[in-house]
Image (tube, rainbow, N blue to C red; front, side, top):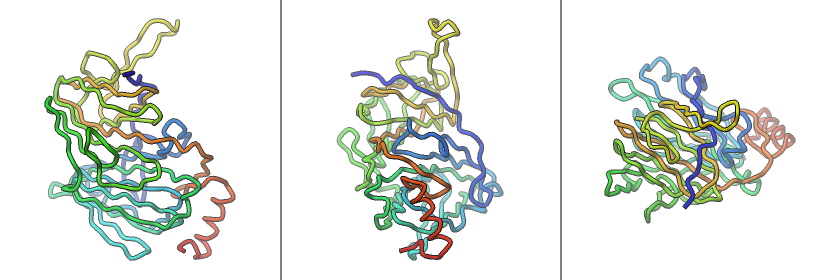
Length: 300
């Protein structure tokens, strides 16, 4: 087995989206080659209702899939096809926008005013860009959890893990989407197929990745100016860890344990033409989408 080294560590950046929702963006709206087939990851965690209650009013999507995972509070959603729903804590919605949909997402805090969740965008290959839209709404109770002898807990949202399969099916990128908790001071290795791109997003506790032994922050190594002396870097919570190639990820949990999303998928390796909520393969296709949006023919 070969441990995936850390390629890059990124601290998610404050961003405002929708009608004024304050969130943190781990990656997106840039060169996404290292994350292919994924395009964007947002962490919408907030304890102040004024910072999220305006939500994400009606907006279009085409050519992608959006994955919404709620940890606290709830998200009410509706779309141009008449679908309505309410995502509660622990629930997941996997929406395939395909050829086009208009929808809205309105977050609501829990009784303490807390709202926390993630939205991940996955690209669709050219052969499926114009497929019919569909939803996969998954309740928390439907998501299997693997509990290891060492206390490690893994919720399997999508893909296979240790003989359990997540409830989300038929996704083009064949992703694996895991919610992982490793207990304090434990070291854990998790398999990731070598042909996949993979990243971890730390959102609770602390720990070190790679074969490092000291449990603090999210640890990686770089060389000094001479290119030969290892220098340790650490970052903290709300950090995205992008992995290089290999067939397993190793993490050493800190004194309070560590919880993170571990996401991997097979690269599509196709051209990306992207503007706002629409992602196609060429500028001409992108222009056509916006022309149809303005002409009122976007929904087919």
